[in-house]
Length: 282
Image (cartoon, helix red, strand yellow):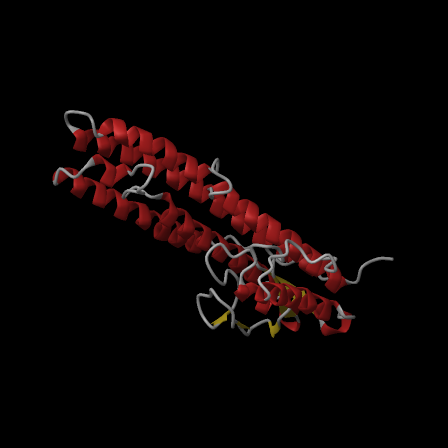
């Protein structure tokens, strides 16, 4: 028996959860220490420690920072390109499920550059702080950290910003590609959270929510950036996706999604942490 368009859309949204998570892993996280951006920070931290021991440490460190900036910009730019492609591909897939020809691709050239500038500003702030610390003869540990302290050259803030803007570009590309099709505004949209042990309270509570395409999702859980947002990510490292929704195909799908989210909320309230709801076929 073939799946109806809405069920196919939701299943694709679940796969998008994993694809967004894979994009975060490519940046680098505690669980994925070999991510491209995290690897640049790790390698550069070692180079900085050596440069700080040079007679002209400011010059040596400046050389390392220039190379580090170049490498970070290259890696983040590539991930942003991948994110835009993800959004375009998902829009085409969602429209196809409903028998609607996809519109033109969304390139988001200006948005991608502005997002890249916003992320690189985080590195530039670290770089300026490092130069200032060298001029004031600060301890090396204050710059590069050690086993107990992070140091100024910290990957966490930079990677968090890159993950946020990558998600922003995914869903702006999705939105733009849908809008390029005149039938796009006939759709509503539905939030599809990644339902597992890491799902936030915010995303459990928005899972299955249906909104007009031009209206924001209403957020009540924590953490969240705002009470209303047009598209994910709703918080740092948010894996929630959005799919196209037509009520005529909802044969209990939304109820099943909401039941899965409620199962997790109830289990957590009782102090238990389930990994995955066995009744949730999505």
